Length: 219
Image 1 (cartoon, rainbow, N blue to C red):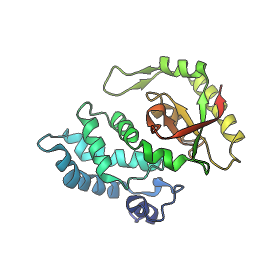
Image 2: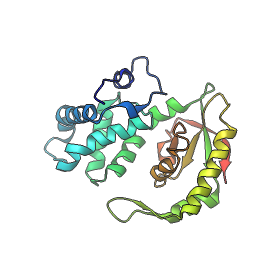
Image 3: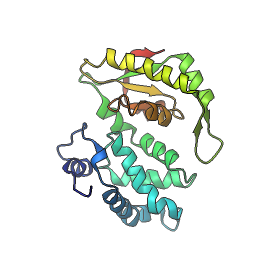
Image 4: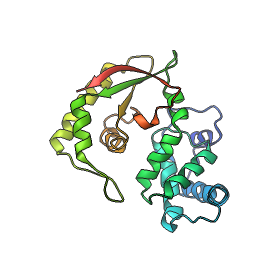
């Protein structure tokens, strides 16, 4: 629908922000307008005479913003996001890769949002065996990264992850799943239907001043 979502407005302006809001209610036309304005007023200042790929300018920026919001990452710091998009776009036209680069630049914000009352970021780590299996399943040679894992192993991982997520669901802070940077996008895709509220973060998104607290291990 084309209705305006007040939670979306709060995410842009940072006022009374609710981290639990659902970005799925945001219409793509609104995101397209925000993406266009970001390109017109901020990216042009950042890039100067450089030119982004036309397809990225037309569709990619809006998709990147929507990707962030779907994982409850605020887009209120538009200047930093614009700078990160410009950096990422110089090396690739992959929206997936650029989104991951933007998230890494927002590491301080992401860690602050996920922190518990004691100043730690609670995380669920992957076992060495799962870490190895994910690394072996990812192909990064092409423009878009690909992931090759059997449906049975995907199901095994989802079940193992759900067990740990449910075991810590009653705690004060909902733990994030901590994974390799190349695997983050794919792990999130696996879990978004069964546990959409569970954050998935990469080692590259841990800010240098953040303190982790490992509360469990998957596998």
